[in-house]
Length: 345
Image (cartoon, rainbow, N blue to C red):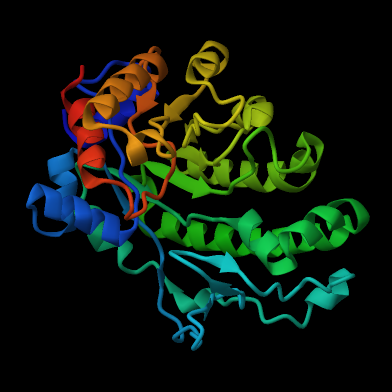
């Protein structure tokens, strides 16, 4: 089977020759894997691993973003970040906003600084793969960074109009950027894969009622965009999101990622019993302990177990329990996971 066929097989609950596999990680992580395998370049490495997806995102083409002597940098939202990899927000430009009027003078990002012109040619290159496109669309993350996480949670109760306005501003930006992606390559997009983290270690970061108030409707609009263009929709949310899985199914989410098995209510066997006939599960091979500290044989054994469990309805995509593998993970364990999955039928 070609990679694209594997993807559509699991959507229909049909057992493919092997389950489709996805890779996401820091460029340095990919280089570590490449060095370990002796491959040259991203494409050769992904093909050696057996990765069935290729991701084509809109491209930032705007003015160079500011960076500072202390190692921090500014995002296109005007948020200053610092730390390893994507870092943490150290400024919250809208923290003091007390009314919707206070948001009017903020310099919101311009869609003119983004391009989708490259998508058409790239899609032709990957016609046999399952193509992921549209924007990652982290509208909730950006809203909380603009306001400040704790302030945002407080204002959800005390000043909900401001939170709603900021969330909607962020959402509208990503919705239009994704709409342009679909307009450019349309039905060549197999999967609209977006990311917003709603869960912590033992439950949602805020109540299901607040999630429904601020998040459900925007998320449903993204789902509807995917389906209107003949694509499937995958949601990435780290943590324990079990409380809202029925909502996700209700609004039409097809695929749930990353199945963070270390979180309290994300036990794979329980999830399959409750939702296995309604969702494709995407991930679940523990990144926190197994891939970081386990032996190669432990990685191979757990990979087989997760495939048996999450693949019991033939509706599974092989991936770790985190969407972004960091360079401190042993490359031999990453390779062992994919090698085992590639050969395990």
